[in-house]
Image (cartoon, rainbow, N blue to C red; front, side, top):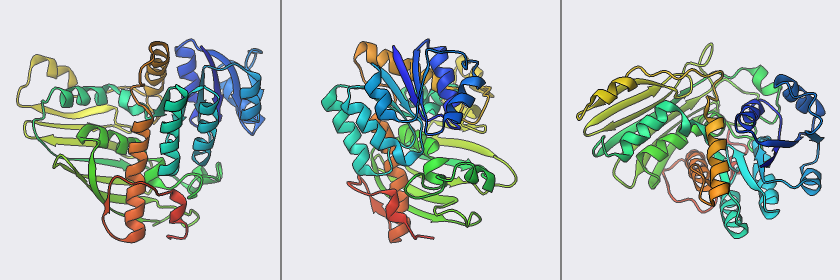
Length: 357
């Protein structure tokens, strides 16, 4: 399967690992900075691979190569434009989070992918974490009983150097703030576990310490689901002096689970009324990861390849990407309007937050 990568920055190394682990034919890499491509290939021992073409224009790359799959790992504000171009040229896509910066663009991605018969996966790779998969199995088996509530906490640190190395970060048009960038994976998991149907969101966001940014460095929200469950969201880049944790809690009538670690990769609490011997392996489970992005990219790529070959929906499809984006945008809209926001959202974009702080 012929593959190309668009965007060779911080997250790209996980994509290249996934490419190599899945034996894809790595045809081309594209970035506006040649040095980014070179550094990425050197990191993976691919600098002498003359079969990998280098581009600084993704449209030229697509025009000159027959591609089956493209991954989009550019700055977030360009995701939708590039994705729609690839979709309209019949190329399957993996889109880094967030899938877009507006509900309108996310809906366009979903619609045009259907029209063109291509597969689109939102890169919410934490769904493939071992701990997360175990929680999901318990949810699907009904082991929690009636769900009461849940919460996600992303308590990370991002210093000024993180933003100066990539000036697009922390801007409304190209990135958003802590909720859109750092917290959206946790928000995806929370919505997936409790139920995709959300009724109402009330959120508050602030820019407390990062006064050189446009967007928030802390956000909190209360979410009301249509199935009666409620949840809280906390996301921040203000934790001193380094990343503390990313945790996901789920509480039900017959079960309690806490997933912890720096990127929802460990099981800290696993309690069920119908406990079996099999549950013993989950208590204290720890998945070793090389960075905060976890190991899920390889599994996500494996699934997308299989979805293309078998003509089925990817496990993490474009609708999943829209759902996570919608919840973040609903929190932003709630902050902007200082009131609870009803879902679904038909339209809202991150740039509507311009001047909020």
